[in-house]
Image (cartoon, rainbow, N blue to C red; front, side, top):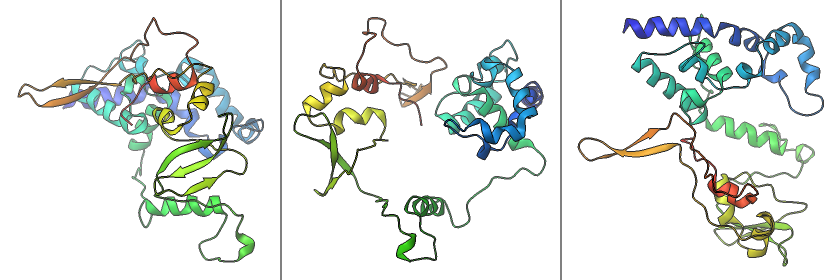
Length: 267
């Protein structure tokens, strides 16, 4: 309705300063590591404008633009739409998603000539390009000189992360089909944090990772509230506030316990 349109226009106006500097700095110029500032020097004026906004806005959540004091979104439809938009970014409601991310998407979707990009050939082409990047091969080359020895194995379910006898070192993986992959140097685990407890099967390794004590098999804090519709059917509702950690929880909680009890978002 007209109220949603008006509030949407006002919201984009009040977030203009947040977007202006960030939109003029290419994502490829933002890197990590000791040399991170170097590519940003070309965009020094824009970077200064961004820093002037302060860390609360540049690194904080979108809540000040949803619930005040910078702006208050009152239209129910617009709030739902912003939550849906933010969910696609973070798996969280708008008030708990990065302010810069939400503001930029609002700008990008409504700029002149805006379009929804889609990879030619489908999303599978993105995966194929990433695989070629890791293995350092071109799509048209089969020369052994272009092969760095790296391999990406897709659709291979990892059953466990294997360790040495005393559990002090990860030495490889066991796949569901029984195959064993030995690590040359180390195992890097990028699985969902809630999976770590199950992947580490050696009890001593689990105690070491957990700071010397056995994991307590804690349950994750949920972003969702499970409720029921009027007809009795189940539904889930996003929590507007981050689930509070147990006040009685030990502050020196171990790594695996932290992983098990981490907030489980909708993503």
